[in-house]
Image (cartoon, rainbow, N blue to C red; front, side, top):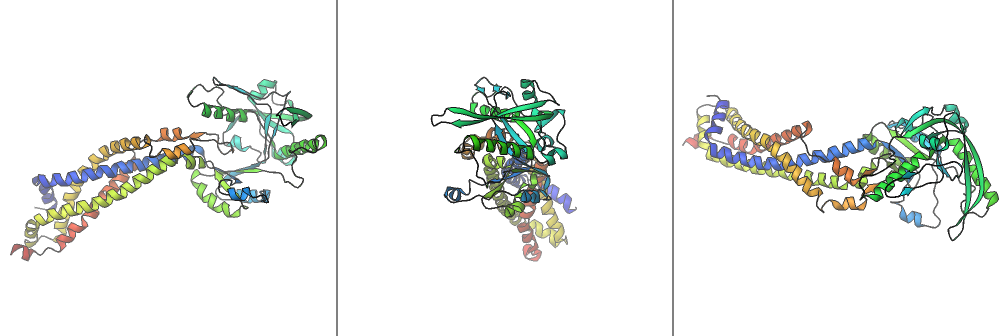
Length: 488
């Protein structure tokens, strides 16, 4: 009888010992399967959410980690140089980039958009002027806005700083404007008294040739859902309103508008606190679109040493880092459980099989004394273990998945993981890095324990690998068997 057939007969003949080994592997397999299911699910959430957020990065002052420096009276901030922005833009991780001069202007004659909701009306007077040095306009390329009429800038428009712009369809509708029209923006300057009253100081008419009309892709004009989350709804409406009232212009046009406003303010109100210092350079905000969200960390490591003091790289995926703490903590816990379960499985299976070997030493001694090779005897033991463990692991693959689902739901609903969500339940994308508003609820809702090819392969590799490693000690016992002593 071959050793393979002997192994199969031994499994069915010694039902009690086979059942004990099966139950041990099944119980431990459930723990490993559940932990791997949780770990795979949390990793999938992080991967999918970061993919949704996109790989966009900018450079900002790092207030959070430099509070003491900013508290000093004599501290000085070095502004980012355009040459440095361009140098960083040549990184192999960057797909394309832009740097923007941003300004705001209050108007009366030119109507701005407003959003009304069931909670309250959100109003805004004036516009955000967003400059661009990238003629295709980064927001169009990233599908944050959709061009519905007209065209984007030409390189000549950018180089010469022409007063040409793109406005939202809402603004065009409110003011009866279309592509080819000249929009006159009546920029107003105000003085504010101590009691809060404002006084108009001057008006500057800014002619802008409309070359394109866009629609934001993420604007919600009315928000009727989730009434209990009024703060979140108001924030969504503010972001929508800000996008609707954005006018895209070449950078040089925005800079020139700012200069004209400052000069007028100096003449009319030389003591105004809103007049910038004479030596202050134009401020630009760089935005880098990376080739992949997976390149964010590498881009940060490459860029950070080049930056002036007090600056840091901020990325769109930081939203997940801010409010995805519960998923990270659960992934860590499941990782620890996998390690502990594997070690426990190695120890328990090794001891159980070794005890069974001691009871079977006469049987094994007979095989060896009859001239059977030790490799055949070892092969018999390995096949027995693989048959029993294979059945146990396949069954625990199914039950362990359900166990992981129940445990993870219990953890997410408990206070154990809630502290990360409480710190910042919502991360708002006001820095222009992402048009998506990410909340802790979004991350929780994206979490799902399910069967996947990665889960099945990972679990079977870990499970069978653990069983094979556990067989080392029993096999060493067989190697040391002396058939002559056993048969005496």
